[in-house]
Length: 320
Image (cartoon, rainbow, N blue to C red):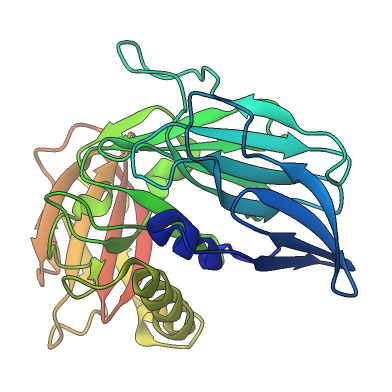
């Protein structure tokens, strides 16, 4: 699978005329409205998405993704943020296309369950992600090639667009919006087995929060993608895979009655600590404090996320 960064030009500037995607021996050329099979630079039209729905006056192709040789997704819609979109799927390498969104998903009561403002589609480690809406951005996922979808989490200060994986750790980044900066942060480990999470900001990120990654103001949208891609590949995940000293850090005691202590942390360098409950709610936040009073916490399972020098490590402990 190739990432769909080149489609940014189409979404923001309506100037993209040809972007190529390859999977095994298949090459696809995507234009503003049309999908072609490309064999030795000879194009065969597979589908024209220009006039499928009169509700969407500008049927630009905003994203294309391979799942495998036969299963592909195409996201169609206006290039303007927040306008309606449609997600199409083919299971026979582009011969037939089925509209799979808008459709209703299971979300908490009193919340709109229709995914109709999808920003991006992503296939990562066998899971399909949908990034829906602008304010109150939502992430859905499917583990069965789009047959069923799970509402994962929903966040007010966000415009989510991409997830990156480093081992079992997932990072998410979004684009700049009205009142919030583009940022990247690790998805808290307690989120990984939850659904229907409602929050104000993932990882407590909102405009220069420590432990979150930001780009400079007024950075062009395509450069935001490349900045986070390079940051993740060359710094975040690269450092996580080295033998940096976070591997030696432990917490004790466990179970905890009152104080939990971070052992072997380099206190000469700044670090941040966040403690979550099993619902992913932040209970305690501390900066550069290695012994934390947990006496007031209710009994139960908690997660401690430690961030230092761009690295993070998560611990589980029981409060008794």
